[in-house]
Image (cartoon, rainbow, N blue to C red; front, side):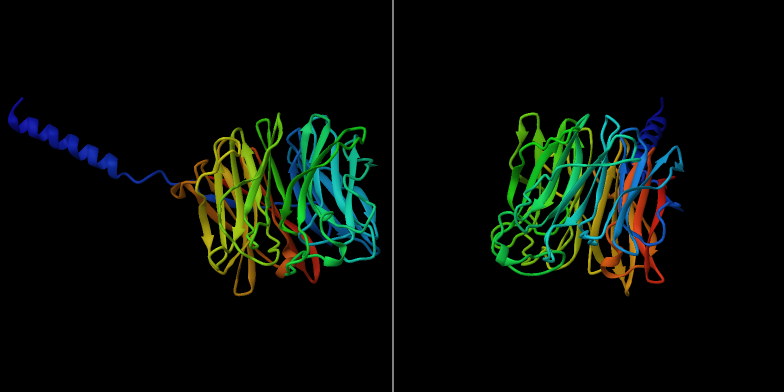
Amino acid sequence: MTIRNVLSSVLSAALLCACAQSAPPEAAPALTVDAWSLPAPEGSAQPDLVQAADGALLLGWIRRLEQGHALEMARLSQGAWGDVRRIAEGQRWFVNWADTPHLVSLPDGSLWAHWLQRSGDGPYDYGIALVRSADDGATWDALPSVHPTDRPLDFGFVSLWAAADDRLGIAWLDSRNKSVEAGHDHHGGHGDDDGAMALFATEVSAEGLVARSRELDASTCDCCQTAVARSGEVTLLAYRSRREGEIRDIEVVRETGAGWEEPRLVHADGWRIPGCPVNGPAIAAHGDHAWVAWYSEDQGEPVVRLARSEDAGRTFHTPLEWRRGTTQLGRVAVAADADAVWWAWMEEASGQQSVWVARGGYGLATDHIQAVRVAPVTASGRASGFPRLQLVDGIAHLVWTDVVDGRPRLSGARIQAQ
């Protein structure tokens, strides 16, 4: 080989190497949005969307009646909605934009649901009504209370999960440690009252036997949602705590085979706020991987963050600051499967709310994230509630509340990566 040929070969190799090094990273797949027809009638709001043990989707909602309210549900299986089934109805319900009913399906095929039932004449005298169905929602049996009922108190912001094949896990915020005279800092109120809400959890058997409840945290934010996910054999319960100096950050408490552990911070935002922001976290898990999404204003400006864990919630990486600015409303949801993590949130600009979805890799690398504005929301303020997100076969299913001609209704969309 001549010197010229050697130099040519070296130069060609160098150019090939440089091209390989400078090649742009593979772009994240674009997201497409399709309308998703829902079976909920006009007048429905406060949606819940969960995946059943058999892979079907369960949609629940509250429907306003001429007198009182009803909790209803429908099942989506193999792309078709089943009949709408009524879980319960009543006239003394506590119906709230943020503290909404939930459904869960256990591996034994049973369905469980809850709503909030007024227990006294005070504005925040209410408790958790819990029911179970063994026939796919055709009939429902009432279960004993999981909390005290001997004095005026409030209990809510419930999370439900499968503690075993036939046993329900349930967590809630509990006011038993607060003085009755102190009042309540709830659902958007401000104040520094006497005592704090606490986080409790217990289990309920198929026969309705309620285990002794355990206090997991004696001081939580009054009216931010709790959220739950199962990471392998570990239960992860996320919530907003309330610490000294009115610091209200997101924490996770884990339940393993050895029982419940002490709470641990997801990230030290250091958000100091004297009242509840009514903006709880969302959590999802797949295997040992877990993700928490939440809203904060620790630097005096709204921000949406996500943090990931690779060890079933023992530790969390430095969070991704996903969105920042006055347009951010939070109201997050998150879901994950074997391929990706998805999250939803809400924004408001020039008086117009909108719901958004993003998809990213497990590591939340920003160059592998795609986001899309799913739809404008015709509701305003709190009427739009909180969106719900689930994944089926890699397709994100999203539900939110609109208001048309003064009446609420549920809207839906399916989002997928191309």
